Length: 89
Image (cartoon, rainbow, N blue to C red; front, top):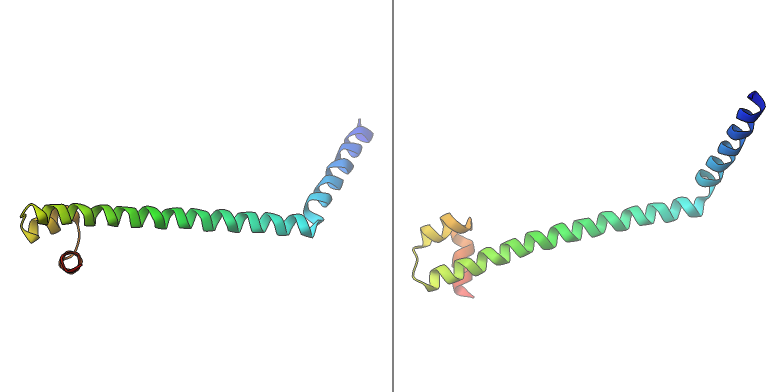
């Protein structure tokens, strides 16, 4: 039994050395992890930009319908400056 356990341990050690010892595998894993983090960051930024664009569109329509600036600010969460810039463009 001890001999059998020893053989399993040797095989496991060999596998660990293989997986952790290969610099190319490590490099590829790090590159993959960096790519995933960059992608998640880009998705988060795109979602944030989409929300802002949506708020600007709503504010534009509210102003077009003659709503008061303070009401537009209250319901969109946009600042006075953001809304004024929207009107200028």
